[in-house]
Image (tube, rainbow, N blue to C red; front, side, top):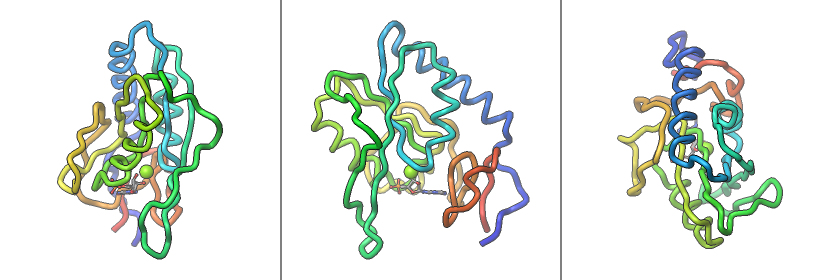
Amino acid sequence: MNLSRQVLKSESEIADRVRTLGKEITTEYKGQEISLLGVLKGSFIFMADLARQLQLQARMGFLEIITSRKTSFMTEIVFSSSFQIEGAHVVIVEDILDTGVTLAYLMQQIELYSPLSIKICSFLDKPQRRKVDLTPDWIGFEVPDLHVVGYGLDYQGKYRNLPYLGFVE
Ligand code: IMP
Ligand code: MG
C-alpha cells in the first residue's frame, strides 16, 4: 500500500472545518467548563487544533486503547494521567469513527465514572462501515471507505504527520 497522490482534504479545508466545529462546540457549552478527552494516538493533531478554537474553559486528557494483537479485541483503556470525569461535561475527541466498536466500548466505560454528559467529536466518519448504533455529535468530514492517512491518522505507523488528508492504495 502506497500513499495516493490524490488529496482528500487540503490543509486549508481542514483548518476551515475545525474553526467551524470550534464555534459550534463553544455555542453548545457557552459559559460552562468542558473536559476534552483525546483518544490516542490518532486524535493528537485534531485535538490540538480544535482545542485552540474553543472559547471555553477546557481541561484536557488523553487515553489510549490497548488492543490485543492476538485477538484484536480491546483489552485495556489506559489514561495518560489522572483525569476528572465525575461531574464533568466530557467531549471525546476521536480521529475516525469506522465500525464504531471502539467508541461504543469507550462510552460504556466512561459512563461508569458518572460524567454530567458525554458527547463525541470525531474528525472523520465512515458511516457505511458502522456495525453498532452510534451517531457522533460533531464530525469534521464524511469519508469514503478508503484507508485514510494524515492529520494524525496512520497506516502501519506511518503518515500521521502529513498536514493534509490522503489515503493509501
Ligand atoms: P472502529 O472500527 O470505529 O472501532 O475504529 C477504530 C480505529 O481504527 C479508529 O479510531 C482509527 O484509529 C482506526 N481506523 C479506522 N479506519 C481508519 C483509516 O481509514 N485510517 C486510519 N485509521 C483508521
Ligand atoms: Mg482512533
